[in-house]
Length: 257
Image (tube, rainbow, N blue to C red; front, side):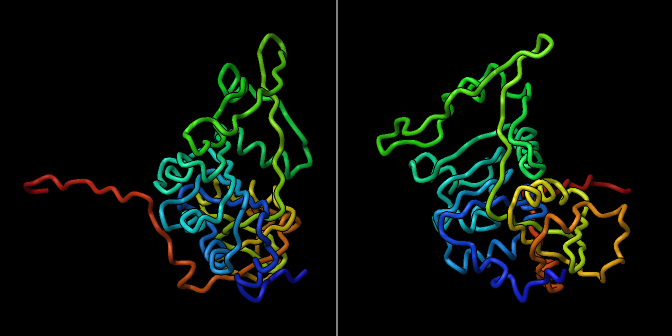
């Protein structure tokens, strides 16, 4: 039951070229940055990655993108990474765009053993009808396009069939956890982390604070340890190293306050 790994490098050492990986986080919030860097330093490539967003240039999954390590991406929020846009338009990466709620449910369904489900999201659009551009060709034309999906009517409403997602590995970040792999996520960092963890056959969690088994109240646990195979404790410096995509400040009005 002791799932604590010796280091982040050890925890990702068996992730081979061509692996499928689900990654938690939203933009730079709640991303498993230490595990991503360990994978980057290991040199693993040709990866198929499922993540809501893909970081920014040189941060988060942007590290792997900048090094040309991601061959296929499945996500829904991709507008903050210029290198991603360059690779996609150049035909260097394949992209499956998915509605955000659908992506969340596909990960959850995969983790729960549900092979597919129907949703109204995407009906009447290329998401259901096919034709989304997955990969550009070298001439700028369409090399790979999405196929049409099954659409059925229930009680007079049309729904599109979406398949659950499972991956070989998942990388997530939690605020607190124990050596059994029970995890608690902090506020908005909860986002896609539990869902990504459920979808991975081998889930690796970097954890900011490790507590003894039994200290976490069962009612506060967001993800039970049955979904987690490896736990990587973070140092104080690693836990504190967090970034913002955009820093916004407000001008202070002149005059007395």
